[in-house]
Length: 211
Ligand code: FES
Image 1 (cartoon, rainbow, N blue to C red):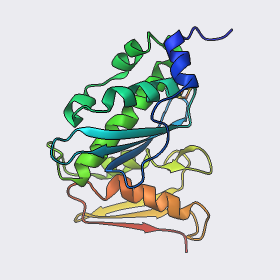
Image 2 (cartoon, rainbow, N blue to C red; image 1 turned 120 degrees about the vertical axis):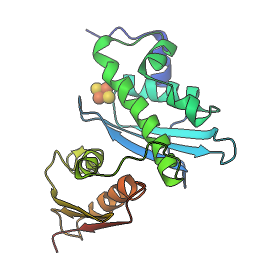
Image 3 (cartoon, rainbow, N blue to C red; image 1 turned 30 degrees about the vertical axis):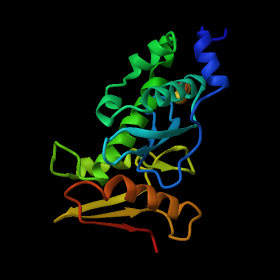
Image 4 (cartoon, rainbow, N blue to C red; image 1 turned 90 degrees about the vertical axis):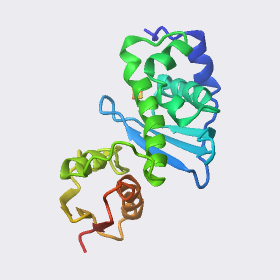
């Protein structure tokens, strides 16, 4: 039986707004859903003076609900300050779409997390994080849970290619169970860097492959 989608969900799914990526974004994220394993990437451009999101795009590798929510939250966030955009949650998105079936709530949560992570990435890059908690091994592991392993469509932690994580005096060393010439090695390396190197107390990130 088809899911009871509203007309608005179907319209945003068929004609999603703000799809694609932004070259040299000011903030970006790739988030994965623990519920279904699907992914979403969000890119933002931010006015450095006013902190207003001047442009935003998303790429969804998820379902119709995720595409529709990605579309609506980019519309809602464009033109808002970072602080106002942070207040957009899955309920805001669902209401703007006229409602989502209950079993599809996690798809809207994924889109919202993508937006929040892109904002967080911007704030980390620009030293704007207010709550400066010391980075721990658990922080690193939770960041690695957001790095996709393109071979499996799941994150690098759940696919067990993270062999070791060492954190000492602001220097992180991560051992990845792949040869450095593997076709996905450089993409994984870049994503790990992006998720970790801007943490306020991290000075250096080393990523070691098996050779
Ligand atoms: Fe995965 Fe909707 S089922 S994003």
